[in-house]
Image 1 (cartoon, rainbow, N blue to C red):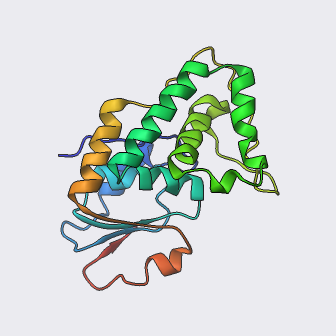
Image 2 (tube, rainbow, N blue to C red):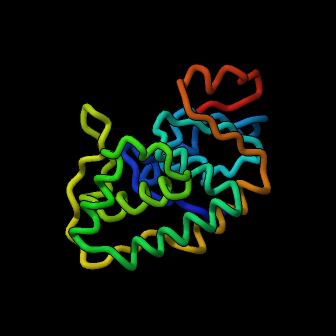
Image 3 (cartoon, rainbow, N blue to C red):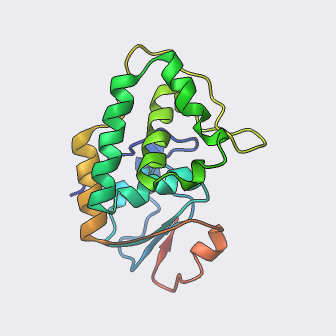
Length: 187
């Protein structure tokens, strides 16, 4: 039984109401589709063997992709350790500003993934918000220390993602569900 839980706090997260939602899940289904995966509370609770997950947020999907590849996973964790070691108000603001550099999108996926987790853990109330230009703009939570990840939880997610058939998409929700057929479950 999967014990993983969401690795980030995400607006609209379903962790608080998961027991109510489970009442509506079919006992059996072929492929699970979650076109708005967010933090993954429902995905991790159901732990389907076959799943198609999707979200439009590229930073969030960078994390999921790193959780499916050992080399990227290890690099992301190393970068998270670096963020924890260097955390301060000034450091937070510096990392937050990385996306204002036009070359940010050229950064390796593991670096962008670690940045997204760090900002989520160090910002005010775990909020993910960008301005009209697409720049992350949430203020710091002004914490002295930040714990960016639970190692056992991330390992659990990695094991799940690499032992089951989990397809990660990033795009329009209609396209993400286009291959759904009778007997599949779309949440």
